[in-house]
Length: 304
Image (cartoon, rainbow, N blue to C red; front, side, top):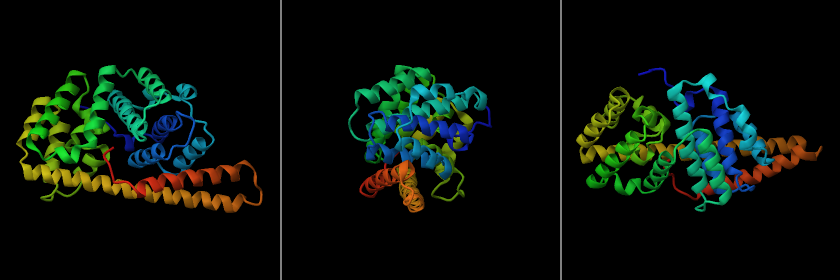
């Protein structure tokens, strides 16, 4: 196995920026600035650790509605920067995150579906693979209700691990990309890998064992055998770790939105005497961000 596989947050900055632009295209799929879609967009770009400079650049593009997949096609050059496994991480993660943004306002519009299909075709993601990601999304929504129930836990493992294997999605890719979120004990990128780097305390030792099983074993049989050996108290600890992670992500996402509001508020102060498009854009972005952060302030943390 290639031990130099990079997860999304560790990929080159231009690749992460491209990823953010593709997500931005979904935010703008209907030509508006929907606060629910923008809140999820922020949560995702925070999860991949997109720096503030690039985040501000993306916001400016979103504000003036200049994020268009048909234009972006010429900018996509994954082969130059990523190896095969990393390209899989990029495209599978992207499809799941696009679904998250698309479903954030509970309605799938024709424009959103068309954009998702265009991106799916461009990155050669099969309908069966996309269906798996859609199923994972639904499982994510009820994960905390089901995860500590033994039978439900086994059903999740069997269905997702076996389906993913049948569709040719390696477990190593699922682990790194976060597209195993329907079985969230395998973690998101920042979840499993970041938590796996913690000290081997009693709380996290079971997670370390799971990470080792996946990253070094990478077989459906070994992974399922390991997961099935976890006792209920262990699963409860895993669920708690995941809950803590997503709550931390939720809070840090609010923090960076407030920082961006402060940045654009300063821009307003700098340009208010000049007027013009810069002032108008800054005011528009502040309004958009205030609505997005209000959404996060009034909702619970969720798995992404």
